[in-house]
Every structure is written in C-alpha cells, then in structure tokens.
Amino acid sequence: MSAWHWLARTEDRPTGALGCAELYDNDDRQVGFLAAWHQDDEHAADAVKVDSRAVAHDGPPGWASIVMTRPGTAIAFDDAAVSAALRHALRLPWPDVCSTLVSNGTTFAGALTATARPDSRDRLCADPFARVLPRELVRIGPGLLGHTPAPVGPGIQRHGSGRPWPWDRFDSGMR
Image (cartoon, rainbow, N blue to C red):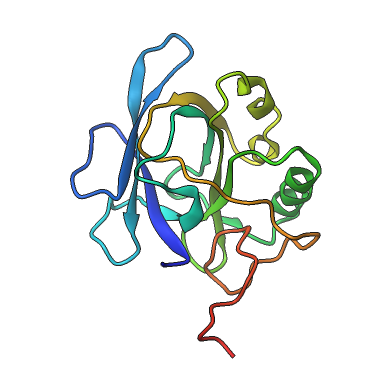
C-alpha cells in the first residue's frame, strides 16, 4: 500500500480512478466529483497528494470540508497559519477523515476533512483549515471516504518531505 494517493475535485466523473464520489451542495444540487488515483496511475492534471488511508473505493457517504488552493497559489507547509490549523485539528474531536493535501515536498495545497456520520455536518463548520483557505462544505456520495486514525501526536511534522499530514511513521525501507 502506498503512503499517498492523488486527489482532485473534478466537474465530470473521471475514468480510471481508484475511488470517486459525487459532491452535493447545501441545496442538494450535484456540484462535481472528488476522485482519487494510485500514486503511479494517470490522474487529473491538478491532482494533489492525500494520505492513502483517507481513500476507500467502497467508502460510505458523508459530509466533507474541502479546502484547496487555487492554481498559481503557493503556501509553504511550514507557514504559521498551516501549523496553527494542524494544532487546532489535534484539539478537536477527530473526524473519520483528516488529511492535508500537498502538491510537492514543501507546499500546502489544502485539506480534506470528512465524516461518515450524517448528523455531524456542524462539526465540519469548525474545520481549522478553513482559516487558511476558503472551504467548500459538501455532502459526499459513496465511493471515496476512507478512515484516517488520529495521529499519535502531539507532533504536527510530517515524516518525510512530500507526504500529507498526519503521516505518522517512516516507510519500512527508510533507515
């Protein structure tokens, strides 16, 4: 299993994705798709890295807070606002899915915070990553949401450049 997958928000249902779920706004209108691909597979051009545990092709429906940078925007992963959001995320009740999104080894590209509990939409309104970038709060259909266990904490640093947080271990091949 790889440490990360590619993730993209798309307008049309992509082909060849590992997982894909429809997205709906507060008025229950479909507003696109969230899709993931294995790290070695062909993927959407604007895809970013997400913790692989956040993705499950047979995942349940739920609610998601999607925070993503706009093209041409770059925020350092070590930016004080990102560090503050990571610390705040550790203080909140842990959701079913929480992963930062990264575009390369040093750039924060957003975050995916989600829950499969239908009554927990309000919990996502407090998404600390929405303080860093604009958030899209959506209902997400089945076919994508996995589960990211709470990190052992209190660390907010990633174990290896280019990995999404909360990656809490080094690869077994790294020494």
